[in-house]
Amino acid sequence: MNNFDFHNPTHILFGKGRIADLANQVPSGAKVMILYGGGSAERTGVLGQVRNALSGHELVEFGGIEPNPRFATAIKAVELIEKNDVTFLLAVGGGSVIDATKFIAAAAKYDGDAWDILTSGGAVIKAALPFGTVLTLPATASEMNSGSVITHAEKGAKLPFRSPHCYPVFSILDPELTYTLPSRQIANGVADAYVHIIEQYLTYPADACVQDGFAETLLRTLIDLGPKALKTPEDYDIRANLMWTATLALNGLIGAGVPQDWSSHMIGHEITALNDTDHARTLAVVLPALMHDQRGPKREKLLQYGANVWDIREGDEDARIDAAIKATRDFFESMGIKTRLGDYNLASPEIDHIVAALKDHGMTALGEHSAITPEDARRILQAAA
Ligand code: NZQ
Ligand code: ZN
Image 1 (cartoon, protein in one colour):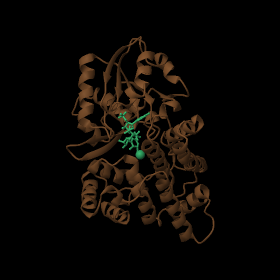
Image 2 (image 1 turned 180 degrees about the vertical axis):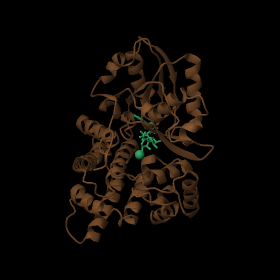
Image 3 (image 1 turned 180 degrees about the horizontal axis):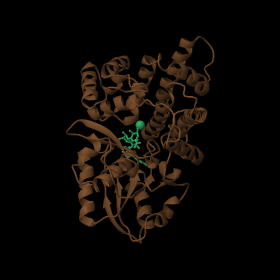
Image 4 (image 1 turned 60 degrees about the horizontal axis):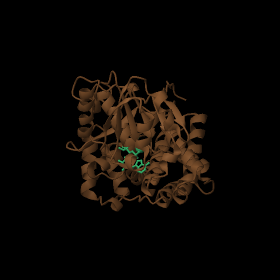
C-alpha cells in the first residue's frame, strides 16, 4: 500500500426529513446564497423546504446552473455575491450545482482571473467561501469531496480542479429527494459511481485489501440495486443504499493508498465538451474499450474484478477478461445506457477533435502508469466506435 493522507471534513446528515436540520448547520447571522439548477428543485418542492428551514436567515437566490456547469454562469454568481455581501453558500441539486458552487466559492475569494483556477487544477486557491449542499442526485460524490469540473463553452474546454478549501462543510443526503429523478438520471448516477470505483480499483495490485474489498462491495451493490431502482423508483432502502454507495465511491476512502487511473474520465470530458453528452454516458462508451485496450497492464486486476465482482472463475485468463468486459458493457446497456460512440453521433472527425483537445489540455500522460497518450486514446476511441 502507498503512503497517504486522508482527511475528509464534510459532515453528512443522512436520511428522511434532514432538510429540517439546515437551520442548525448554517451559521447564525450568515447571509446565505441558495444556488440551484434549471428548475427541478423548484418543481419538486425541495427549494420550498429549504426556504422554510432557513426562514430565520437572510437569503439570496441564484438559479439556472446548467448540467455540465458553465464558467460564464458561475461568474455571474460571483458578481451577485460581491454585490450582496454573501457569507455562506448552499448548493441545492446534483453534481453540476455542487461543482459550480465550489468554483464560485473559490472564485469569490480569488483576486486574479478566475480562469486560473481551472488552468492550475485548483493550485491557486488559497481560500473559499464556506458552503453546504442538499443533494438531489446521487452520482458524483461532489457532496463529500473537494473536486469540481467546469465547462468553458467558448474555449471548448471541460476542466477539473480540486482544493482542500472546497470540501462542503455539510451535506444533506435525503434519499426521498431522489424519487423525482427521471430514469435517465438514475441510470447516469449508477454508471458514474461505477466508473469512479473502477478508476480507483482497476489498475495493478497494491496489497490494499480493505480498499479492494470496499470497492468490490460497492460495485456489486450498484450491479444489484441499479436495475431495481429503475423498476421500483420509490423503494426507500434501494435509494438509500444507492445514495450512500455513490458518496463512498468518490469521497477519498477507497482511493487512499492505491494507484488510480482517471483516463476514462479525462477522455470522456472531451466528448462532453464537444457535444454535451451526459457525463456518465461518455464513461460507458470509453471504459469497455479502454479495459480491452489496457488488458496487458491491467491483467491481474481485470482477473480479480471478473472473479470478485462478476463471479467469473472458469476458462483461461483471456476468456475470463473478455467475459468481465462483456459483463460491464451489458450492465450499462441493461440500464438503458448506450456504449458505442456511434450511438452519440460521433465518428472519425470527432475522434480527431477529441485527440487534439486532449493534447491542448495537457492530458498527454494518463492512466496509472502515466502511459496513455492521446494517440492511445485515438485507438481506444476507434475501438469504441
Ligand atoms: O438542472 P435541474 O433542473 O435541477 O435538473 C437536473 C439536471 O437536468 C436534474 N435533477 C437533479 N436532481 C433532480 C433532477 N431532476 C429531478 N429530480 C431530482 N431530484 O438532473 C439533471 C442532471 O443534473 P447534474 O447535476 O448535471 O447531474 P450529475 O449529478 O450527474 O452531475 C454531473 C456533473 O458532475 C461532474 C460531471 O462532469 C458533470 O459536469 N462530475 C463531478 C465530479 C466531482 N465533483 O467529483 C466527479 C464526476 O466524475 C463528474 O465528472
Ligand atoms: Zn464521473
